[in-house]
Image (cartoon, rainbow, N blue to C red; front, side, top):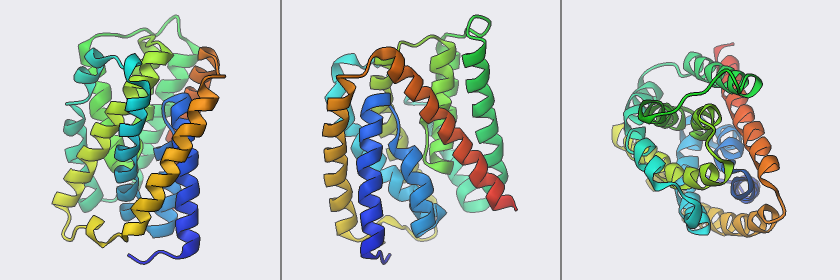
Length: 251
């Protein structure tokens, strides 16, 4: 995998901005990084690189907000992400992904719209819904590099408080990134990660640490309502990007 200086610079900016946004709203690296890296190195390799960066970033983010993580919700959602990642990997390697991206993006947008516009009429909670959001997140992360929007639909409908929701997303992102990476690399005819240059990971690591520090400073000055609004905007944008990428792939 050959990357120009320009490409590495773009990856650094993406990693910094994504880590910063993720610290403030709970998500961001996958949303910003997956579309950009897909253009630079291709859709399969681009999403795979984001899976790696997202998993590493999630470790740093979890350490930063560990006191707010709802571990009960984590253990409900995290393990079933594998159930979504396995069919997601099969789709990536065996079938056209564009139509599924359209369907997934549209369904997440619909879910976010309904739960936001009619919050008093749509209320769900319970183990089954939490686990379903995990399976959907694992599938979306493997397919498009973004797990957050699917889980945000559940968070919005179940009235999950923003502070613990954003914090709990971080270990979930580690699980989704690691699972998606392992499943796709093991099922690929030829692994991609061993061919990535070492300086790609070094640049990404430094940029993510810098982004986390900047995001922590911003988060201290951001109230809960603004953070929740930003999380919904980020999730909606991620779903819209997935839908548009699918439409472009179809036509």
